Length: 389
Ligand code: PHB
Image (cartoon, rainbow, N blue to C red; front, side, top):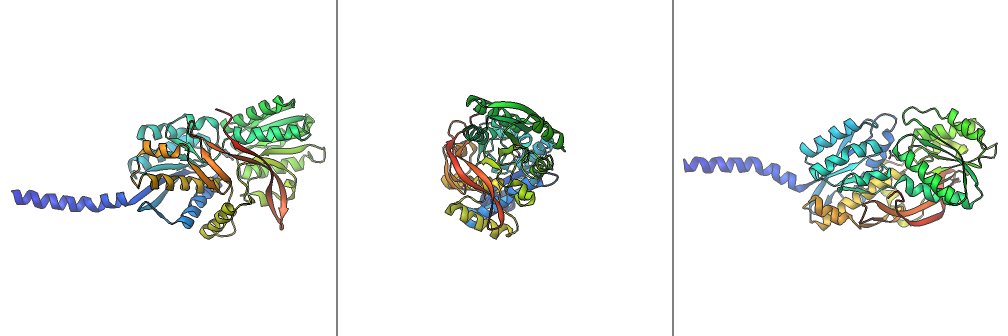
């Protein structure tokens, strides 16, 4: 009998041991993002940025092999995002949740991060409120209020007295409109009108026409990056706003590096404010662009979501190193709070109080550089916190 128990115990240990060892040897990152539908570029760029980090720094950290488990929300789909997070937590037993291009997907998952105690690294979603929804959220991207306020202040100082705002009708757009109206008005600027356009399948022409009819000096725009930017710039050109002496200004989402080339000459001279441009001139960005090209080919250009994916992996590596591979959510958050990184966009820090990012916001002008279109940085606002908090 004793012998039988001993054998059974050995067999059991043998059966369990490989699985346990494998789990202990792996650091699992559950990447929840948009990989299909009109926002498919978000998942692609975030993942590309993460791959660039692994290319440059290797795919092991603190003795563990890094595994990225990719899940597609298919678009702004809170219910899908939630289900994917549940699977990643219970079935895959991930150490980190990461990704989140769109705010509604991040908001849906935040309560699960709290319940299951998993650090959640937000690599794009940019409405201010997200970091308040769970103590396990840290953001390495930006907030709309953070990049909009500098744009408004710059505009007021540079001859724009009357502005019209066009934003997407969901949380990041509302944040952006509020931040612009507040900061621009505080400098004596006048708001000629404000409209919000639907997030899904927007037709920009009537909104751009309304903006033109209000005869502002400039139209300020936020739309989520990618195809919507192309549509806005097209409507702006077709309705002849430039010819009417009306300038286009906005957050850098509108002139997203991923689609900038497709927008063509209509973008020349457009001023935007953002935290990352592929044209950023620094050794860190040169190294990032090299690793990005090695990991993903040279036909794609990294955008701000790729930079945040890369920085998000850098943050995860820092945590793994500090905790010597033993990931515990509360200890991980202690490492993330106050973390500083030399990012491709410049020095960034996670605010220890809010777990939101503090960074330089750049003012950029769309120009041709050696034949290609880029957002060229020419002014900056250092150490900007999220003013929405
Ligand atoms: C968001 O949904 O938070 C979001 C999406 C795209 C952007 C910026 C913010 O370009």
